Length: 185
Image (cartoon, rainbow, N blue to C red; front, side, top):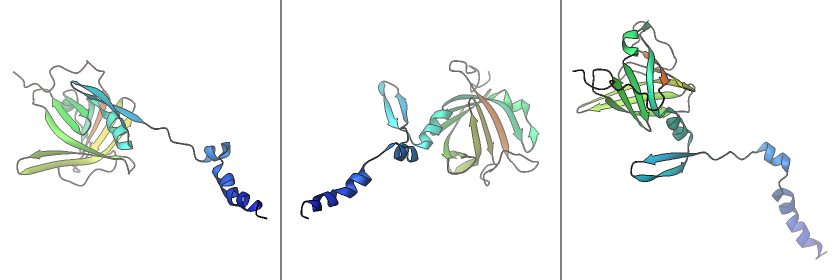
């Protein structure tokens, strides 16, 4: 009987420690995602990516506004003169004839559709617009509330609601409008 005791003690390890193909099929290991951060004058760094970092990385770049709708009405007069340049956590609003407006932006991926907000801080005043966004390839859709109002939760604007919806197309690198963001002479 004493010879059998060590075998019985190791039996659970042999049964539960072994993995077979069916176990890996039920619990596949998630592939690890990394993003590369470029740093001026320094070598690039690779970081393990969270869902939010991956989402911010997907937004990075310059976007041309192709359509603007405010309170249920199209605003073609604004669309052609407006670009948005995203970096991780920073957004530049570039409008022809005006200086760039730089705001901080935040994403909340826990909701569907994901939430988006930007904040502009001025001495003695904070302005925030919140809403939702959707990214499909090179098309980005944003719908935001009026300043300091409850955030938009759907891609819809109606008369009197203060919401603005933007449809944007990614601008290929090197094709940004040279005149956007520069004051008119």
